[in-house]
Length: 535
Image 1 (tube, rainbow, N blue to C red):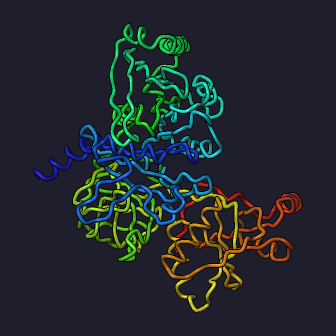
Image 2: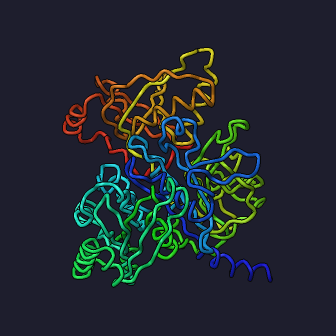
Image 3: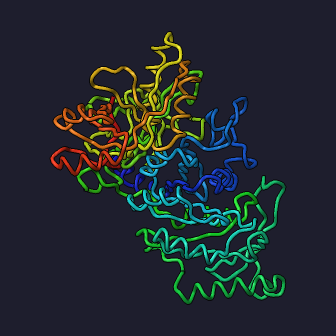
């Protein structure tokens, strides 16, 4: 009886300490730099850019994949857990490359909040809009960070108008810059009117010293820069652009902060906001729309699969977002799709590519289940109370390529890699039900093909030949329509692993003509709310 009482009390209290969020941005807006600086301010790294690792083990960064280190970009998502101000922070680091976004979309399904990073010189770009639409669809509250204010850029008031006009999110600045872009003196903290002055450190490797100055002293020492900043904040007061936590949590407004991740200016303010403003883990809706209580028996869902994070062991890690209850390593769970028991003997907390054995986890945490080759993206695991969560989205493919092994002697390795990378969602794999053995890869962006080819060669020893396919549009169809389409030049019907039939068209105008001439044929858009295929 005492154990039950302890569990009921501990789970809500521990969930309240969790903050689970993702960082979204356009490429080169500074997302990876900001991620590293969060780790610096939380004490998880001794110097920016180097994650603490146990003695004798290699260091890890958020960009752990070989291709990421070669290209200097984030390609795959990473989980980074650390403590800050007695809170457990789960930072879901997402890909930032413009051509690789599907992994980001899936990660947002596991996040309770997001930070939108904007380059002060560029403002909102196409990828930013695309990612925000996913946040809006999932009702994810968004904090905004105007980054790179230490460099020349645009008027911040102009950027506020752009955010509201293009995204429909009302920005409510919490800090405001003193000085123009490129001459960044510090910020006005609008909550108390004080001036926070920053000083640079060598290469931004350590926390930036801060000096809090009262308004009178700031006016005397900063002159016109201070007066211009106060005029702007007075204007913000007049139009009501002030922090409103209720509208932030409702997805209507976005608390905004200004700084420079490179120099560490404003990083502490933003990290404090994650703890103070971002929501803790809360009850999640199941697939029937009912909220599952935080203190219900354990349940979670797989939002990411990653193989070969440790190439020496060729392992599979399933990333599980804990939604309810207490996770205890070694507990036997139920695999929702199959109803079979699933052992959690090999459970780990993940920090980039590093991992430690984890004994206990609570709602909001992410558990890495090692050697979980039976799990797939979107699968639910639960203890004693059956539950299924809404499916994790796939997205309408925009690019297509045929794939075959360069060396026919590596046929088995090629198909083993193809199956694994399909399970991870690196690409969608379409097959010909009539027997053509050459699969067609479908992707949202071209970078997915590059990742596929690189991993197939380096992890499975099978170089692939990828040839662009001519398809320009995809539609879901059914068997009767598929029979008609087989007689249509420029159309082809392929099958996804979940059995869905996809009709591919060389010419979108031909598709429009067919829809007009044959309204009874099933040619539905490939929706973004479909579950990941099960192989």
